[in-house]
Image (cartoon, rainbow, N blue to C red; front, side, top):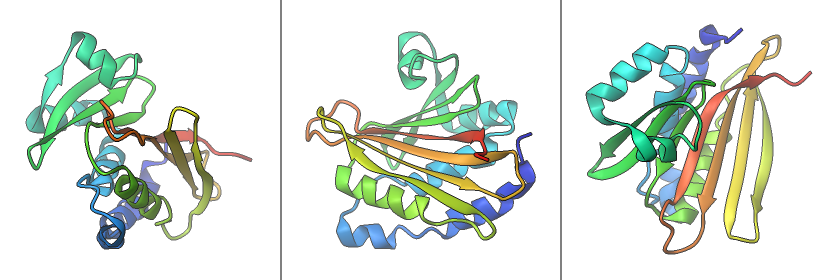
Length: 180
């Protein structure tokens, strides 16, 4: 069962996650905490997610939608934030994807780490330490679990560290089964 009731603490934490620490290391120009908050707020409400994205973005279809969805079934939108385009999608499997087209890679990684370590009160956190593949792709993930809950909130960043990346990164937010 998806535990919508426990998201109150998660959202409070996301709202309080200050990007100020990131600005000390570099300005990513990407509000990851706001994207994750939007995903968590709307994750349990697919029609509400679609309505909200239709209000703030442009619904995509065809190949561009499939690119934003990573080849999975679902709905996708192009949303502008501070005149910068981002891809938002909700897969039929219940994962929210944000495609970051541009931004400072080290700053994005630092802001994601700040968000992932902002564990809501009453939750435990499991971190998958950052790893970098031979192609320069950095992956970093956090899972927040409230003891006694059947599911957990999972946050994952895939970040292209190449200076001229076509897509800078992807943030996934969704539920996963809790580990025993």
